[in-house]
Length: 110
Image (cartoon, rainbow, N blue to C red; front, side, top):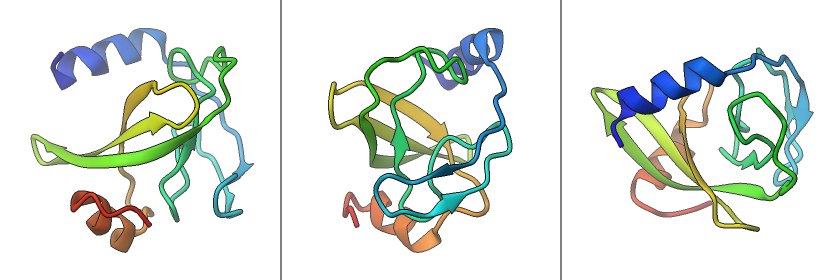
């Protein structure tokens, strides 16, 4: 599946939800902007959505950053749920911890 198809399906079902949260892995207080989907310090996320922003997943597992891929000069974090194994791609943001992104690109998890 190409990134364009993923973006198209995401835009058709995306629900923007502004939420602040405390990272369950590193306890960082994160201010959400409606597009925030992972902690900028440790890059972990939480499996709460079926479609981006819908909060319809009952899993609730921690989404472990697994890999950093580059698609057309855009850096993408591949997350895998520690509980159910679901995988998901998320864009990086300018506030993401660059050291963790570099380590992730080499498959070295911090």
